[in-house]
Image (cartoon, rainbow, N blue to C red; front, top):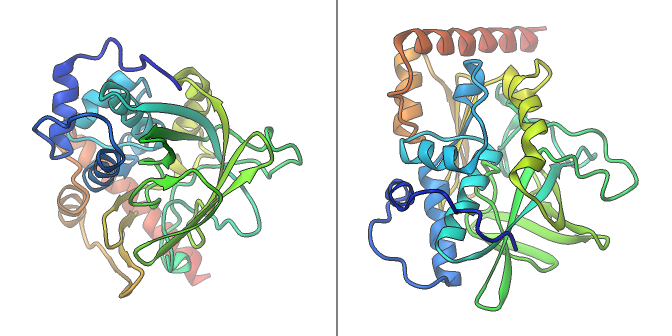
Length: 318
C-alpha cells in the first residue's frame, strides 16, 4: 500500500475534485460499493485526452497538479488520471497502491490507443498509443513503465482499478485470475509469473497491459511521461485523441473522426466538419472545459488536427 500520498493537498482541492465527479455530500467509510461508484463517475466525467500535449505543453504528473486540473475541468492520460484518482482514494481512506505497468506489444495487441471491442480501427485515424518495446523474455523487463496501474483493497477483496486507459473497464475488476464481463465488453486477468498481473481487453488498442505487484511512486513514471509527452516518436505527440467511458459504451474522438462504440448496437462514426463542431464535441460529449484555450490555441490545435486528418486520408488513397 502507498499511504499518505494525499498529504499536502488541501481539503478544498479534493472537494472541488469530487464536485467534478458529481459528488457533493459525505461518502461514508470506504466500501466496495463506494469504490465502484467513484470509478464510474471518474470515467464518465474526466476524459482521457491529450490537448496540452498536442499544443506542445508537457503538463506535469504531480498528483496535486492533476487534482487541481481535474477540478478545473481538464482531463489527461494515464499518469494524470490514475495518479490523481489514487490520491483521491487515499484521501478518502482507501488502501490504494500504484504499480509500474506497461502496454505490451504482442501479436494479439492492436496498434493505436483506446478503442474497445468492435473498434473499427481500420476505419479511423491513427490514435495516440502508449508505446512499448517488444516484450523481452523476462517478465519484469517487459513492463515498460508507460502505464500507471492501481489496485485497491477494500471489504476484504483486492481490485484492479483503472481510470486511465480510456476504453478500460467501467467498474473495478476483482484481482483474481479469470474472465470478466461488463455489459457487452469482455476482459480478463491472469498472473504474470510471480511478479505481477496481465490485464487483457480483446479488441482494444491497449489489448495487453502488464503491471508489477510491487508498489510504485510518481517519480517512477517521470522519465516515461517526458518521453511520451514530448518525443516526436510518441503517438500522443503525433495524433489527437479523447475518450470517455460510460455504462453503455465508449466515445472516441481521434483527430476529426468521432466514434461511438456500443457492443450491442455496433460502432458508428462521423467526420467533424470544422473547428466549431470539433470544440463543441470536445466540450459537450467529453466534458473537457475549454476556458484554458486562447483563440490562438484553438486555431493551432484545429490546424494540427486537420492537417493530420488530411495526411491520414492521403495514406488511405494510396
